[in-house]
Image 1 (cartoon, each protein chain N blue to C red):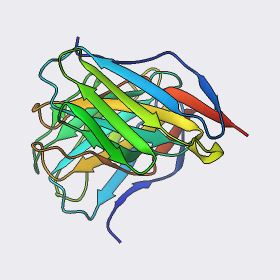
Image 2: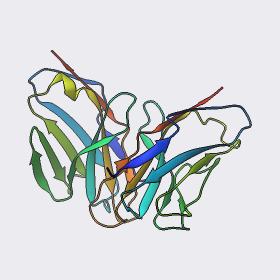
Image 3: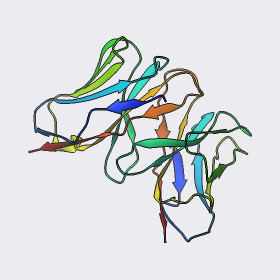
Image 4: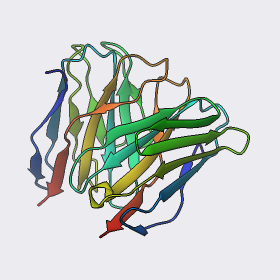
Length: 111
Length: 114
């Protein structure tokens, strides 16, 4: 069973703090990883993708990938209440472009 | 503006009834996907299609059917064989099946059995 597992939530952080979201995957054939943000009742929106080992930064977001450890993470710096949402980690290989999603982590940023 | 349109936004199904969820995209994407989302369970793949007139079963295809007669359209039918259809249904597309492309999602259809 090819799986993507996200760290148990929910996660609550104060405004201005760093939120750390983690994800592990079992399929070593997975080549690309994506982080989606989903507000309650809405569809997911892509916020980051990464396919090379190391860090990738975009504004307040940093994605990290460690293929040896099969580990992906998302750091949100200077967290804002508007970051409160469910964050979905997804991994994909070459099989028809299918993505396998984790169960999501609920993040709450409190003022 | 390019995007994916799902309709209706809310749908109510009676016992024993088949219902069809619409998904239309004007992004010129080749690949399209249907996912189901239940609370606390993330997204599970129902069906996917790489090209017109071709589609494959995903992880939870039982009780569902699809067609891909046009590149732009990938409707999903929830049949009476699907015993627990209440869920949030998401349609997605990407330019192709290779490369490092993420999905573009539609706004979803929330289906409820009444």
